[in-house]
Image (cartoon, rainbow over all chains, first blue to last red; front, top):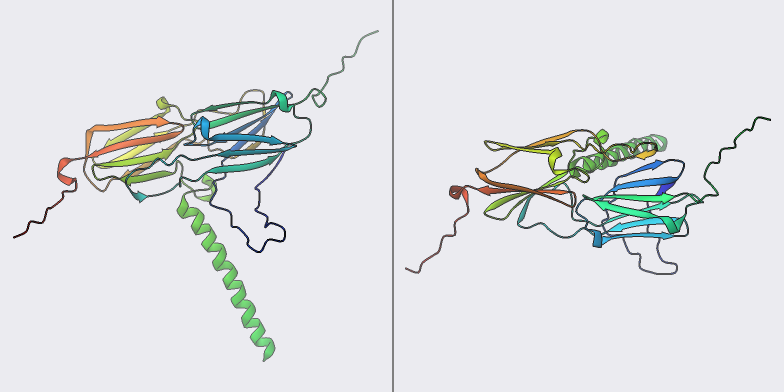
Length: 128
Length: 147
């Protein structure tokens, strides 16, 4: 499974090139076993309503809005209230229908089951 | 002579390249972003002052309440803990970017804090510590009177 950070492409023939806004790339862990690919992403601050996961063809896009929630004047800043976005290219053979996602404590767990065609199949040897 | 000028130009070009590289590393370092191996700090923490309180926000996704230890000693605030979440059983790791090391950060607070009134909450992976300033250091408004 390869990842790619989507680059903004200038529109064809347009004279004005829009610069992308500031976006946060969430840290992810990717695990795999015989049945599925498990993607775990850190999305601190995000609510379930503000999270959107899109699967189109073999492109997975995770987008999440960071709710503005700081009050007062800033004394020290190490993270910004910026939205999250990350794009992945999925391998072939993912059963899109059975994809399941959990979101807890700012961590998204996305289960991407492999379709039966790509699952390993063990051939039993019979003794004659 | 021309060749020599070209050489000088090349040297300056190289110096510019290194300067840009250094600036990029410094940017990463100052923002606190990036992996621990790159010198980043975890968890990234913000401080806000709203007059009566100091609000501390830490990004702690996947950490449970009982895994965080907050200490306030004099004016030293320490946030400590460990993310116990690990590799799920029976899976092979394809990519691991999320920090799993135990963390600890200490901050010297600029003003005196009332330790009794301090509270902390954890919501959606963000820890909020609310520190109440002691009465004496709260800002006071001075009203100008017409003489």
